[in-house]
Length: 290
Image 1 (spheres, rainbow, N blue to C red):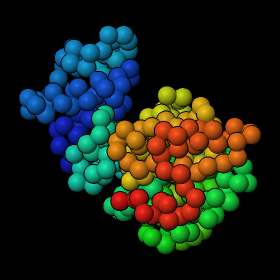
Image 2 (cartoon, one colour):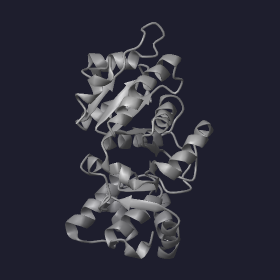
Image 3 (cartoon, rainbow, N blue to C red):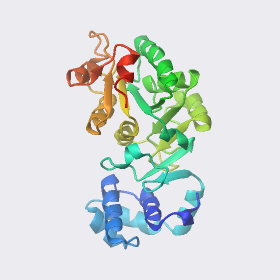
């Protein structure tokens, strides 16, 4: 992408993406200030003050001053991305709290315009979990609904694979740069999705996996989809974070009941007790999905 074709505020967003020790909250403070006062040039001291950076000021200042426009131009040419101000930015994400200011992508961006249903669940999915997906996903594909998941092992991986095998389309949201496939077990499906589907990330190329990236990724999965279907989530599971965020964003949450002895589906049962829709057939999803 041509860096010079970006609006000044988009250039600011792109630079902030590479700065160290500033989170999404601080970035949004800068962007909101820039929009309110029609100002896009800031000194590093102004950035620190507006963003409220208290710790690691020296680290942030060093990264801000070392990033040149010529370097940003090179990085922009290496990858495809949309910003919060792009016409292609998904409306489902645009208005929720601390939405991603930038999304890097590879694949078919038009899939963002379709109805979308997220599938999340156990990394150590059982045969039962896979059987549930075999029942649900072909019918989801028949309705021209795009599936969304996190390209992890287990339910995520099977959701993507079964969607493709059923002739549908799928979107993966990852917590690292698009030049990194994690985990290795999803390498074949990762390559297929790069070519014929869509993979999104909030992080530029060269960004390695960090633990705090996964909850950030989960908020995108929840915000991007019209609903989230949870399969085999334990009591303390990252899938429950996605489900909770979906509820907060006003999205539909569906939970698949499981057996009660192993604890493999205790998180799903808790969601049902808290008001998520108990799914016994595909119709339970289709009648609620917007």
